Image 1 (cartoon, rainbow, N blue to C red):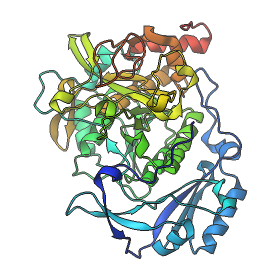
Image 2 (image 1 turned 90 degrees about the vertical axis):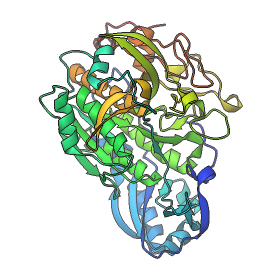
Image 3 (image 1 turned 30 degrees about the vertical axis):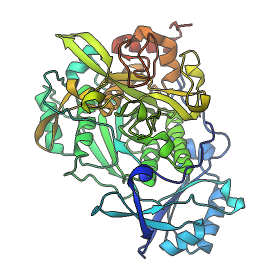
Image 4 (image 1 turned 90 degrees about the horizontal axis):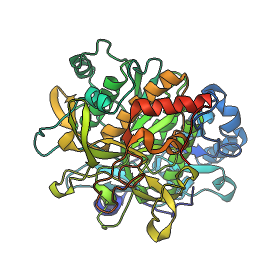
Length: 518
């Protein structure tokens, strides 16, 4: 990982939030202190690999050093902060203090911010937290001092009812999802930063597809986040669970609801990765924000949580954004979305798919920017260097000629004009966006894990070495700057899945009989 440029705001403060004045509340605030890990970071469990290290034994090798924790505790106590919890296996300490105590302890000024006139005020923090020299090397981040949203859901509704739509089951058939597999024995985790889950809608939807067994959905509350229906984000939640439930009906779903803050997002990923109750093998994320809008500390904390997940054999699929090459920023320059830009995740781009019966007749880059209906994200990271597994992919140089990680890695149908039939808050809807592609790939990988007998883990080395034979190569279209070409490109990555072909290649790699591209 390259050293991120220091940024002291969180998306979307720069363009949309107004500072109203100092924070005036006196209610105690909960913060998460993320500690460094012992030793070097663990290697990701890339395929083929030995079965993942057990979550229960992660602490002794890769958790926080108890001496580091004690140093932070002494500092916190001296500043009047109360410890409310500790999870040293995932390097998190939790403290509570008054706003005044926190400002003094971490050298910050808390403020009041507002996005829209008449909208809710929220607490924010304009500076980066600081710590004494003897502690600064031991702490990755202090999260919870800023309550402004850091991410947006990556789903899109069509402007008019489209004539071409699909159920997830139909897309699974078109993408060659392996028959006779349904994800049995797997748990797929889903991160949600808003919205709510409705069991009755989920049951009705799954049964309407002719699936007799409705998957179990476990709702997990993280950092005070809860499943709350009644907002637009319900579309995101139900899209995620319905795509996974339809394509991996034998799997269990664990949906982690967290506040849309850097603290909430970090806690959700960290808790899911280390969840010794639900034991997810795949994690689907359909939320994110422009990479350069994250503070350096928040980005580093998130990345450390995703490194944990990869080391534990959890494959993370992430939507790469729905606003084309700018990722919705107003400067007209290329930007990629985070966490999709992390080398720890399988970044998922979007296509426009037309089919006849059970065959794809046309698949191009999703780009409906002209009608204000979105386009796939994709481009080159300014924060993460080009990974070894992407060295031969002809990733273009990024901003300031930085040789960065290219996104996406893979793709799937995302255009809302060829969208997914779903049920949200009792209403039949069509929804698209790369938000649909992350759960699509998560469900496919759950099927893979069932057949392979262990988790796929970090899929990059395997997918890139297997190459185009296992993907539908998308060679037409652009996302406003980057064009589709033969092989990998910054619109659709390696392409969309040929599910059974990809599974066969992975199984051959496991047995040592597989061949890879040069």
